[in-house]
Length: 371
Image (cartoon, rainbow, N blue to C red; front, side, top):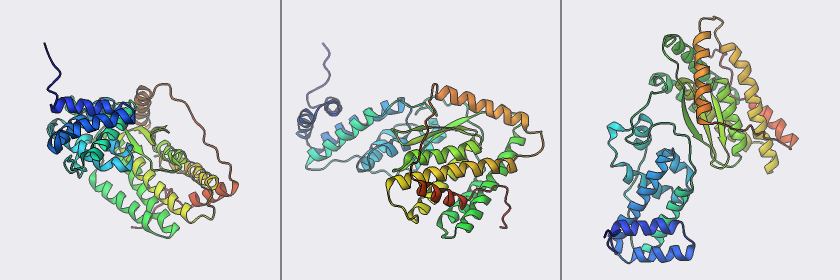
């Protein structure tokens, strides 16, 4: 006859913590106290095992390490980072997808450790397991740990170009002068747009591929921030979808286009927040209208700018059409049956101020700026 484990075994105690995550507070506390009775060493091992199992199931639902940290409450971020570090040490680095390697390399995690009194620490573990278990299924963007890697979305963007672009956008975000920020960001968009078309020429004879990533948004006002991301994405030949309950945007496009979309959208979000901080209105309706208008005007300006950046030669038409088809196919496969959602604004003064602020944003990729 097989038994699940000895009463004090780490596996059984880890199962009790996992079970506690699905129970009510009173019963959960009883399970936590049972585990705490075995002392710090055994309790810590049980906590780590319970968290590892929750993370293993999360990876199977399409999540990435950085996304798990972004999705949990801030009070649990240190614990989830430690749990991810503990779980992922057993994955052979050579077999990890580059996205996994990059995200894990950015983690600065301490070991999972519990000290006396054990009950508060174990209760936090149970809370985190509960949060992780409740996270929904997401489209699989890259192979999970130790899975066979599929085809990539194309070569990575030249690091030298990325250094220049990041430097320009960092200066744009830090300067207090709107005109200077506009010139710096315009130069960044121009650099990336030129690079994107140069790469399209080089890879014209290769199969065109699309890839995907998710961009996480800080609160509040995530819906208008998602509109801003969509404005940048559509201008750079990418598609986007907003997850309102999670606060993130799914992006699909060619790797080069995704890079500029994420960089520029992040920079514009920072600039819009700075402009909003100096706006006169303080009501929620005003601030929401401000950001919706900002995204609306950015979309208009980017659409106009795209006409100036696109080469007049017809030589790139077939490769760009092939890329567009690849993006549409990937988007449809990842997000079947999505619905379009409209965001409204009801505060006229906020809307007007948002339009004015967007007019100062850094969005003229055709404008040449002296180095």
